[in-house]
Length: 391
Image (cartoon, rainbow, N blue to C red; front, side, top):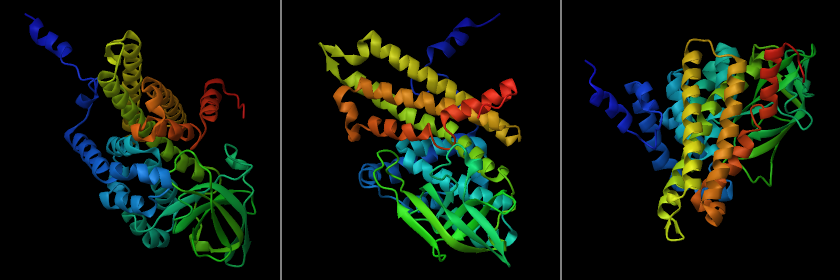
């Protein structure tokens, strides 16, 4: 005979913080990693975010904190659920802090691990993984963003060296980087990666001023004027597979992390609505606010469920560019909408940075565009659905 009382208890128990009970999917290692990352972020990152965001500071200190915590170690980055959960908890504090993970790991450590010579790996990986060295990527150019295949930076072989000329923009951590992965076209017009140290003659770095988003992570323009690079500093990945592999890893981090910002906004809006009274009752007692919170909780829960599934596919080597593009696009679009809704629920207080949601909203305006813009991700998916290339 079926014991209905026991079955009903499953429905009676409900957590507004985890409405879909996703915690039940995690093993003990994953739960410990999540809880540890949350404590780390709350203890070391949250107390400083207002100052770092207002003053565009943080920089090397944040990369070193993340390195000391072990975020960049191979055993961390290869455990997909653990790595995803860490990304989420860091972005719950700020997207700029999380951008350090994308830049340091996906754009620098990952290509050196995958395409670098043994000598390159021995020279840089340990320092990068510890956060003692900061890495940056130079792919985007003023005239070539989504059209990365059209980059104009060029590398000409002269004797045993390559001579590189060109200008890269939107270089995250470019102002503090020790090494750069610069993508340029060789004489065969193949996009190729070059590892270049910051003090190399002919390398010029200029901070990009005026950002109103991702202010906790500095951005630069990097110019190369006859920069000489020895052959051992060339990554063994000819064509777009190199940069696309890096972007794919960055997308994986984002399809988790965007929900960290969304969750933060959800919790702030929910608590504010309970405490704030208008017309003699809490905002949370109105139908409009309850519907908004229900919609937000649903989108976050479904998004995290898809991120968990993507992690399992990544562990099995089955995640594709299309899957990463679909989920990164959805995560950033939905999280941006959630941040906007949360800002609206806070009224005028929503535009004060101490309430956090306006900062998350501003940051997510960038997340939706970088590491492949939302519309380009849609076209990547559309190309695979129809068989026709539209870009």
